[in-house]
Amino acid sequence: MDIGVCVASHINDIDYVVRAEALGYSHAWLPDSQMIWSDCYATLALAADRTSRINVGTGVAISGTRPLPNNAAGIATINALAPGRTFFGIGAGNTAMRIMGLPPQRIREFDRYLEEVIPLVHGEEALHGHGIPIRHVMPDKGFVNFTDRIPVYVSGFGPKSLGLAGKHGDGAVVSLPANSAMMETYGR
Image (tube, rainbow, N blue to C red; front, side, top):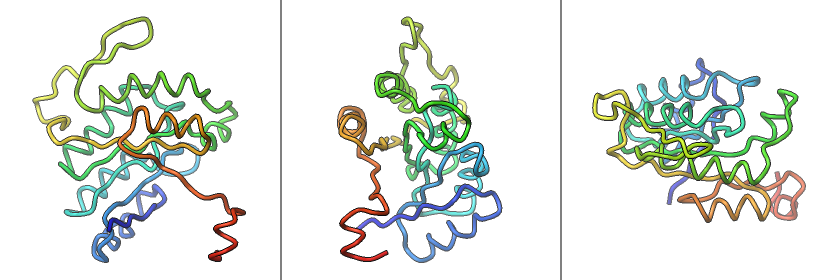
C-alpha cells in the first residue's frame, strides 16, 4: 500500500521529507502557494537531492498562478533530479488565488490548461491559445527528464473538477472537508 505525506513547502523543513522516506512513506506532496510557503519547485529540488526512494511532487501546483511552460519545466526539472519518482499534482488553486485577491480559475479555463500542460509534462508539443505550438526545445541536454514518465494527478472537489481528473489525469487528488460525516465518525 502506498501512503504519502503532505509537507508544507518550506526550504528549511526538508528533514520532514527525509524522515518520511526513512519511515517508509511512498510519496511526499509539497503544495504550491506563492503567498504562503517557499516556492514548491525549489523545495522539491532540495527534497529530491536529499532522498533516494520516496516519490516527490507537487501537491498541488496551481494552474492559475503559473503559465504552462513554468509548471511543465518545473516538474520535468525535478524529474531530472529524481528520475522515475516524480509526480505532478495540479489544481485550480482556489485558496492560492483568493489569497492574491484573484477569483479562482473557471472550470473551462482549467480544462483548457490541463489539455495544454499535460502534453508538455510528457515532453510532447502542445497547442497553446490560438494554436501556437510550444515544446521544450532541448529535452535531450539534461535540463529536464521526459524519459521517465511523470504521472499527473488532478485536484478536484466538485463533480466538474473530478470529471476533469477522469478526463485528463492518472488519478485525482481529493480531500474530506473538516465537517464531513466521515470525520465525525472516525474522529479528528
